[in-house]
Length: 365
Length: 157
Image 1 (cartoon, rainbow over the protein chains, first blue to last red):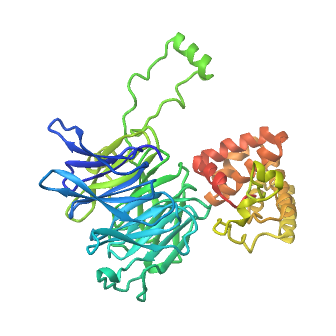
Image 2 (cartoon, one colour; image 1 turned 90 degrees about the vertical axis):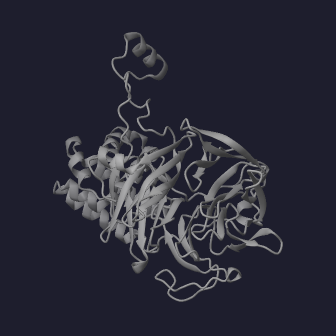
Image 3 (spheres, chains in turn purple, orange; image 1 turned 180 degrees about the vertical axis):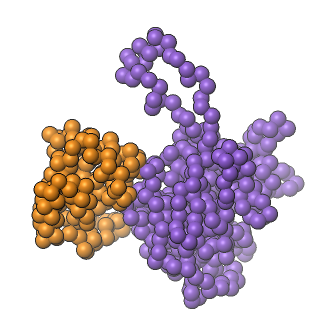
């Protein structure tokens, strides 16, 4: 996809950004409140498709269409980022990468129809991967780690959302049983598989903060949530809007989904199911949309065959599909208070829940 | 509308009539079509129920009945028969009654209706005027999402 992928560093003063090129930019927030490029990471040979920044260990991972991924470590003495190769062993482009909650491993989805779980091998000083292949039948579009650090959910182009066990005995994992994994399973075991009712590619997937719930959004303009306590009961909304590409859980009871409608939408989850709550883009009306001169009207009729303003102006902050949504700040209870969206319009927009809530007359997350 | 046709790949393979995708071991295959798909008996029964309702001027009820369990499998005759039933119902509505009928439909029924509207656009261009009127009302309820679902769903009517 075109547009940008971005993630903030731990203290929000830095950004790692890829912009549909093989280059990755480290951007620094200046005193003028603007981000400028501090360093360009050049290692990939093809377009970088996804980036992630592990805040506590301060490592960046990038993956690209060249079937490679690199982990970048910050060198304190030189002030530069040093790449370390990751042996993904895939024969198609990598599509998505995410660090695990403990930051000791990361997952890479790819067009090779398999998931690579990567961890560091200190003996050879490189990152190695273990593959999860069955029963994935098409490109993986998105992944999300469970808070336990050893379960993972993926969304793929075969219209399914799946949960796998990704416990690594190589790293000394001692997994616990849970609703997702009632008995201990080995690496790569399929724990749950969910279909999309109208055969939509699963663009975005996310575990709730506790890990008990799983939500996914698909190309059939559906929003789906399931609680691990009752895996056969999937709550689905067939939305009237254009499909969503990504989602972010704000708290255990709400998440924001964004995508082809160019606008982040808030959904609320309860025992009864999931429901749409509010559109969060409360941009003011574009000023200067007053009377058109007779000449302008004639020109518009001549060129576009239209007389009015309808259908030609974008009233949202993003001017193209939103592709990524990231949490920036949380309050003491863990609820997201600030998030960022990146889109195919090349924009990174930050959203502050407090001011949005005030503008919308109060939102409970 | 639907994904029932097999496509012979283009170019030189088309000349030989070889479908190279059929030999790809890793090619994606749709899972078996819905087993409890409406068969000939149900579709015929539905048609007669709809006929009864329409003769009693119960157009709303006829619409709901016509949209039940649409056949989405590979049997074109069954699908064609159900399509005729649905088109008949749509034609029987007075323009002013459409709003009320659409308002009471569930989102699943809206999606099924939208699928039939698009099938109508492609198969029955003579009915376009009536279908366009229906389309406007159904989009008002189902939004662009219902149109996307028609385009995306591999189970076509």
